[in-house]
Image 1 (cartoon, one colour):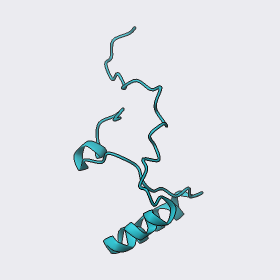
Image 2 (cartoon, one colour):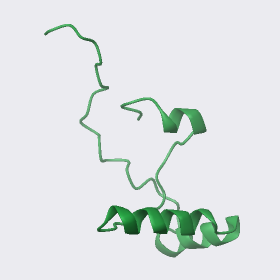
Image 3 (tube, one colour):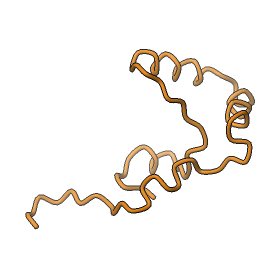
Image 4 (tube, helix red, strand yellow):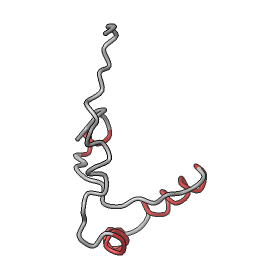
Length: 75
C-alpha cells in the first residue's frame, strides 16, 4: 500500500524485506552507505540472515490507514 507517492512508486518498491533500527541519524547514514557498497549477493545474504522467506515486514504497519488527502479544502 502506498500512502504517499514518491520513492516507492519511482523505483517499483513493493515490500520491505530488511531494516535495521539505528539510534542516531549519523550512524544510520554511515550504515546506509556501507550497505549500498555491498555486492548484490552480500545484500541478499544480509536479508536472508534475518528474513529467509523474504516476508513483507511492513505488511500490517498501515493496515488501518487510508490514503493521504493533500487537498486544501476543509472538511
